[in-house]
Length: 360
Ligand code: ADP
Ligand code: GN1
Ligand code: MG
Image 1 (cartoon, rainbow, N blue to C red):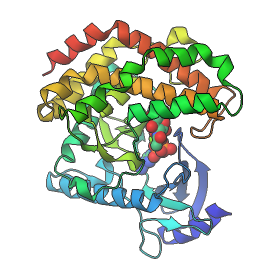
Image 2 (cartoon, helix red, strand yellow; image 1 turned 180 degrees about the vertical axis):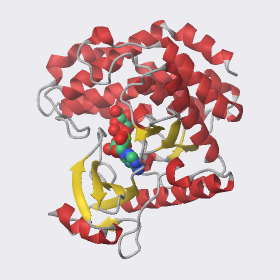
Image 3 (spheres, rainbow, N blue to C red; image 1 turned 30 degrees about the horizontal axis):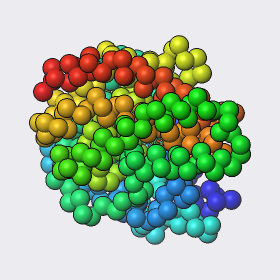
Image 4 (cartoon, rainbow, N blue to C red; image 1 turned 90 degrees about the vertical axis):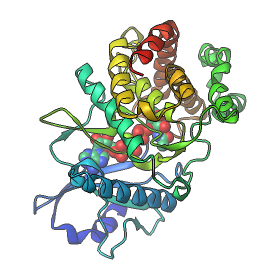
């Protein structure tokens, strides 16, 4: 019903030929729309239980994509492929609020692109490092005060830990007793939660405009050249820590296995991929990072993996309220891959530090 209502608001795009659910995101509802005039569109319903102020989120996206469009045009690039482009409703608005109060938005579908859950070569991961680094660079002169904090304390790992511990105490479904080993794993490593908060408090690092959700599947690659083309999923653009964009990308993309792999022997840090991403990222934005930010990059990979791990495990204990799941114990499986990755990163810390040093 809601979809039919929304489609009417975009009827000026053309005659709709078909619609289907699309992509592997954990948060929003995404649809691909095909029109008979050869236009394809990505339509998304924003997850309102997660994004409490979706209008503000949409304003962030409108401002950022307009800013990027101008920059891309000025340097002679193709803004229709190198950034997301919002499509107006028939009434000329960049989102639609339906009768249930849900917010929807439409983007031009960027054709001839691929999106990976796992890279096929180290060079592709180098490309994604360059793309996320370049994204930060392009936004380095964006007026940060114009952006709303769409999810408060999104990467405040200390706060995430408090929420996790409270959830373990509440244990609404009695699931905690079966995952004591996992809970202990994170408790033993509580020190990770403080590192970046302290660096911010001590003014060793400062907040910049960052993406905050730098998963590999939030980049579109050109299908033919295999070059990273466009950074997508702009919901969490906010003032943040530069290192976290690096760390979260490593967490997801430098994993030998998938984020939800059940066979943990397949999960671990691929050091060659770490190397490739570091090279690309530092080439694109290394010069704008200070000494402490660079020093902390390998630790950011551990902290982002830790944070995601307690979020997955916390959500499992809470009854799978946040991340979409498609099987029983899905969030628990995800938490376990993060644990395996953390252990592997701990053993590879010296190697990671040496690699980062190579590219500064
Ligand atoms: P979520 O927040 O749920 O992760 P995304 O915005 O990342 O949602 O979109 C989900 C998927 O849809 C992406 O991983 C990508 O495959 C695809 N996608 C999103 N926007 C576009 C676009 N403009 N062109 C092509 N594919 C897109
Ligand atoms: C979510 O939207 P998506 O699937 O790109 C989540 C990220 C997590 C990620 C884990 C808004 O990202 O923070 O790291 O899942 N996004 C939000 O896969 O919470
Ligand atoms: Mg996504």
